[in-house]
Length: 244
Image (cartoon, rainbow, N blue to C red; front, side):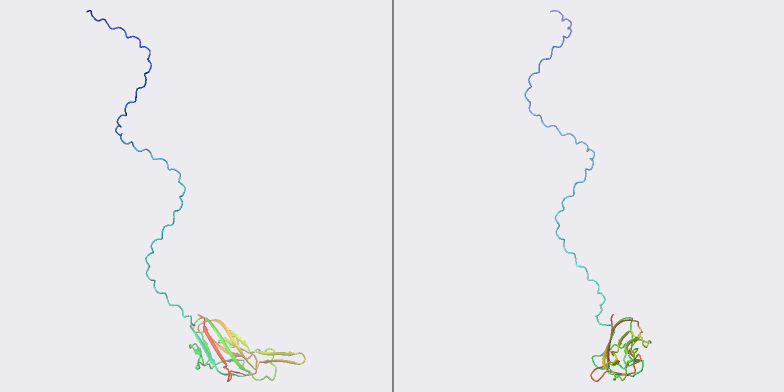
């Protein structure tokens, strides 16, 4: 057998043949092992705020708290009674005619229901105000006057006054004596004190501690005397109460 000759040059590739038909799908392979967890990504931007939700139903009432300790007792309130008060009687008193300024004196509390807290001197008739404040007064006076024989002048205005001493004729409360004026043209002109009557002094006054208050008659030129009180009625009842 002879020796093998040198290899010849490679021939040209032939044209590509047609693809064959796809083969059947093979069975699924086993699941591979999980790979390691990847790193966290960057935090995203905050989204817009959502709408407010609907209010929920009201919750049940909580348990009552523990009762606190009792507070301290407050100061005692006022009893509502006046701090100062008196009501005194002057059974009878004579006023001399022509005397311009006559203080009424000689009061009493001996008979019930009259009383005195001590601020009125019943002998002198001086009420010394015990404390600065407001005081209420009521004084009822019954009088009898003699029959007039002449008409009073037009400038005569007799009165009972409650005054602050040492004033003599200036009244804090004034009650004029009732005077009858009659004027019949060409027939009669008469001005006279009513023979039997009564006057009342009523009022509230702001007074200072130490003020001396007196009850007096100012004649204002009346020449007649007066008799206060009679067998059937007291002359004067003087009542005063503090308003604080």
